[in-house]
Length: 224
Ligand SMILES: C[S@@+](CC[C@H](N)C(=O)[O-])C[C@H]1O[C@@H](n2cnc3c(N)ncnc32)[C@H](O)[C@@H]1O
Image (cartoon, rainbow, N blue to C red):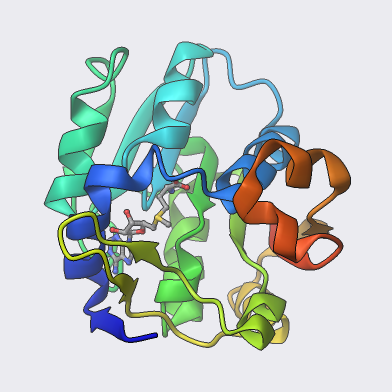
């Protein structure tokens, strides 16, 4: 099948229209696992790095966190800003390949959900995540499991305008690349896990069925 390859930013600008409604099993698998790593966020300062449509940001704000949310896709951010509960979130439009416009040691929790498969300089970004996190803070990094590449899958969606499979640019990072980046910048690994599609998820989301038993999610919990 013909695939449209776009820059990461243009790809997400187009994906924004259907991102929250396209029944993505990775998102369903990821959310509870990220919550387990973050723990109770009531009253905490939380940064959502690569917030997209604010999936984590809005939930975490509703749970009582003070949330700052960063992304470079204006269209994804527009979806996030339009959500109920987004009024109290500080949104920042910024390219993560440049240093984050956030103060040192200013967040108790940092989440970077399903973003780092778009990042070539992982150590550069992980160093920035470490810099903005308080010494006793936790950083949750989730990403599509690289084993999905063996099935020919990278971040992709069906563009509702063209009807074509469309891929924002990704980098073929492996598990060792993520772990090496964390260790290189001096982050401690407090949590590391891989998650496969189980029967419950496959029954709930038709798109998950063909990945039953296959690793779909990789998750790190990091400490400065
Ligand atoms: C798969 S979405 C994840 C969104 C959200 N974190 C979630 O889990 O639902 C990836 C997001 O990363 C953002 N992103 C990718 N590369 C980026 C970069 N260099 N700078 C800023 N945002 C970036 C995209 O715009 C997109 O919103």
